[in-house]
Image (cartoon, rainbow, N blue to C red; front, side, top):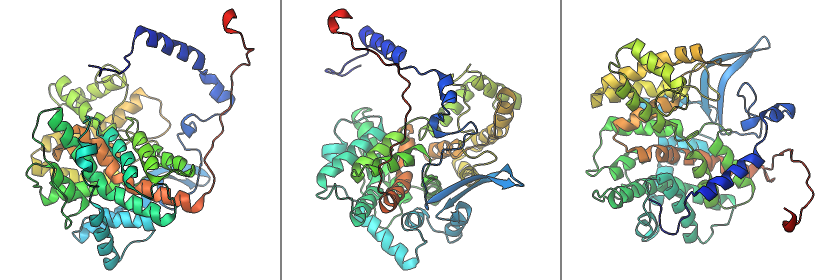
Length: 454
C-alpha cells in the first residue's frame, strides 16, 4: 500500500512516461555510427581504459604470438595473487579480512605488530554515536537494508565536525570508521525491520572487541550469538573475496567519479552503495538462490541431468523463473575460463554443506555449474567462454549460514567498503581533475514556439 502523501503511478504519470520515452529514445544504430561504446565496453566486453590503479588487477587473457588467448582468471590484490593470500592466512589458521584490508588500504602486507595495531584500531571504531541506533537505524525500518545503510552513512556526516575535510588523514579516519561500523549498521537495520515489520523479537548485540569482523557479524546477527569456527571462517573468506575487484566495476568507478568532484567521504560511499544495490551488480547472488528455489519447484527430480538441463534451456528461452533469459551466477564481464573467487569458494562451500547436511544441494549446484556452459553455448552465440562467477556460490553460502535474503547485498557492501576506501584514497592522492566524459548530442534544433501556438 502506498504511504499517505506519496505520489502513486496514475494513468497521467504513465502517459507522461510514454512521452518521455518517445522523445528520449536513441536509435541503436547511432551508437555504432558514432563508435560509442555502450556501458563503456567494446563488442568483446573489454572496458574502455578510464584510469590507472595500483589496488587490484583482474586478468583473463594473455597475448601469444600477437593473439589474445583466454586463460584461467587471475585476481591480484596489490600485486599478490588472491590464491596465495588466502592460502597464507588459512595455513596459519587465521582470519584474513583485517590483514587483507590493511594490504588494500596501505599497499603492503602488515607485520604482526602492525596487524595487531590495525585490528585494535578497527575495534575502537566499532561504535556508533550516542542513540544513533535508536534515532536513525530504528526509525522508518525497511526491508531494503542497502537504502538504510545509505541513509545511515549520510546521517553520520551530521555527527562529524570535519565531514567536508578531504585531507588524506581525515579521509582515512572516516574510511576506517565506516569499515568498522558497516557490519553493525547492516545487522541492526535488519533487526529493526524484522521486529517492526515482521513482528519478531528485537536483538541488539554489541560487537566484541576480541573478535574478527566475520565473527562479530554472526555474533550480532544471531539471537544466541553462537556460530561454529567453520561458519566464521567461510564468512571471513567471503568478505576477502568480495573486498575488491579492479577499478572498472560499477560501484568502484562510481567511487572514483564522485571522489573526483571533491565531495565528502559520506556522500561518496552513499553513492557507491546506491550503485552496488543494483541487481546487475551486487544483487546477483539473491537471484541465484531464488533461481535454484524455482528450479526445485519446476523439476521433479533434480538429480536428473536431462531434466535440469531442460530447465536451464527454459531459463535462457525466457520461459521460467523471472523470464529474463539469464542463468544467474554464470558468466562474467571479464573472466571467461574461470573466476578465481568461485574456484576458491567451492572447496569451502563443500565443507560447509557437509556440516549443514546440505550435500544434495551442493551436488545440484555442481551439476548446474557443469551444465550451464553447455546450454549457453548451444543457445547463444557468445564471444567468450562462460563459467561460474563468485555470486554462484556466495548466495548458497549465505543460505547455509542462515543469513536472510535482505542481508545478501549488504554483506557484499561490508566487504567492498574496503575496496571503495582504497580507491577513494588513490583518487585523492593521484588525480586533481573532475571526471567528465563526453556525450555526443544528437538532438535536432527546434525553434521556440509560444505557448499560445502549441
